[in-house]
Length: 312
Image (cartoon, rainbow, N blue to C red):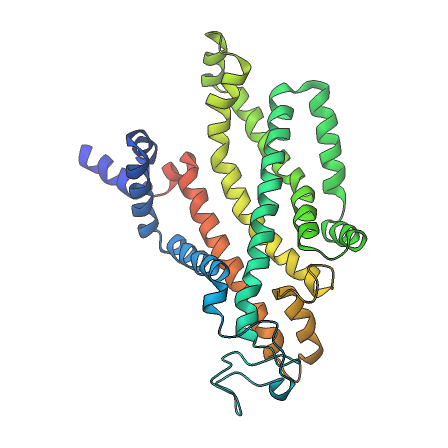
C-alpha cells in the first residue's frame, strides 16, 4: 500500500509542495522530472525557448539585415521552390528583404509586447483584485462595476480605437494591451481571494490575531501565484495574436520595425501570387502561440494542487 502511494506521488506530482521545503535546487529538479514526464509541456517549453533565443540573439542568428533592401532579388521564392535561392531560405519580400531574417527580428516585438503587457496587467490586476476580494463591500461593488463595464466592450474594437488615437509605437502597444487586460486579472484574482477568504487556514490566522498584511502576504498571495502565472501564459499568447492583428491593420509598430504583423500586412497584397511573403510570418505566430499554450497548460497542472491530485 505504501509503495502504491509512493508511485502515485511520483506520477501525479503530489510531492512538489514537499520539494519546495527542501530548497530551490530540489524544487527545480523535481519540476524538471515532471516536465520530462509530460511531453506536451516539454515540447511547449522547447518551442518557447527557441523563440526567446531567436529574439535575444537576433543579430547573431539572422543572416541578413532585416531592413536591407535589394529590388534586384525582390519576391525571390523560398529555397525549395522553383527558381528559389539557397541564400534566402524563406525567400524575399516585395522590397528584396530577407524574410527569414525579418521573422527572427520580429520575434523581439512579439515577445516584448507579450511579456511587458502581461507584466503590467497581472501586477495591477492582482493588486486591484486582491483589494476588491478581501475588503469587499461598496469598494468591491465599485471596482467590479468598472471591470464589468470594460469587459462588456468588444475587446478588439476597443483596442483598435485606442491604437488609432495614440499612434504607432511599441510603447503604445505595450501600454494598450497592459491596461486593457487588467480586468481579466482582476476578476480571476477576486474570485480566488473570495474563495480563500472562507477557508479554514485564513480563519485560523485571523483567530490568532494575524494582521491583514500578514494574511495577505503570507497566506493569500502565495496561493495566487499558480492561477495568475497560468492565466499570464495564456494572455501572453493572446497578446501576441492581437499585436499581429494590429500590425496587419497598420496600427502597431512603425513600418520600419520588422514585426510579424507588419509582414502579414505587406504579404496580403501578394497572397495569391507570392504566398510565402505572408505564409511564413503567419506560421511563426502559430508556432509561438502553440508553444506558449502547451507550456501554460502544463503549468496549470503543476501549479494547481487539485489538478495534480486528480491526474493519474
